[in-house]
Length: 400
Image: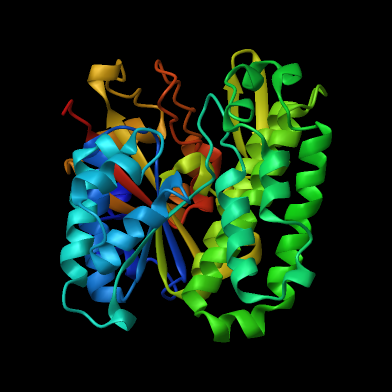
């Protein structure tokens, strides 16, 4: 079997990836099976550099807060701020502490130096302002959207004043209360103030769309796009907070689904502007339904990749990363009857694999699912192989 598998492998390089695709997709996504390993991020950086330089991709989007990502984009496109400040303020989930993420931002800024605006590389976070333990207040995107509209449309068209928004929002702490994640009664998401804010957010978003010809001309397409981001984020956060206050059995499924819908909406907006490279967890980017357990609760939902694929078709491509070992996390040599075990027997340390051909080669052997000894690592699902355009395989992930 090993020779057949080796026939499906190629060196990890942009050219090899593009030869596995029928054309250059508008959104090219690279997934990872675990967070926090700079070995995987270094590989991402190398591959994304090649795809930018050889294939003309002009946005790099990662699984990080979309509003914080604006800080990073201002730095890489125009040099606003400092690298230290950007790494501290421009990322969520602790990703700013990563040396590989720092190197990505440094390289993007260096790439843009001296280039005309039309050729510059952009950065985006495409996650919502959501952490595992809490969700942010909708204050920042809602007030920013209101301020943009207030500056450029007649006051009579606005559904509320800035003061009325401030009164309804109240303190940010009541929105980001960590206790609300596990206890719906601690959430303000279904309070009368929150209900009124949802109506106002919808009305402000509608006004933004209604006035788009004027606003794009009066400001710029970039400013209007940023206002659209504020609108999507405000409405998404208010929807998320509403479900945090929900006591029905489907509460957690709706929460993870809303998060991925916010991701998908951001990715589709990025794809409207320029060819985009995407990096996030495999669960968010795969075409199949995503599954996981939170404690004893099984969850199943459509991730951002599945939602985007339904809209874009062949303009979306997905490369799933698989790995052999993360020994410092207790993930040792994979069993030989798993997909990862079959790939581990090959001689190379890393390669890109034709996923549909690999699925065909393994079809008669019925590989077993790998069981992860560590909650932070999600192995490949053998049934999902053909749903990826390619597999990027890393044999060993050392502690860094």
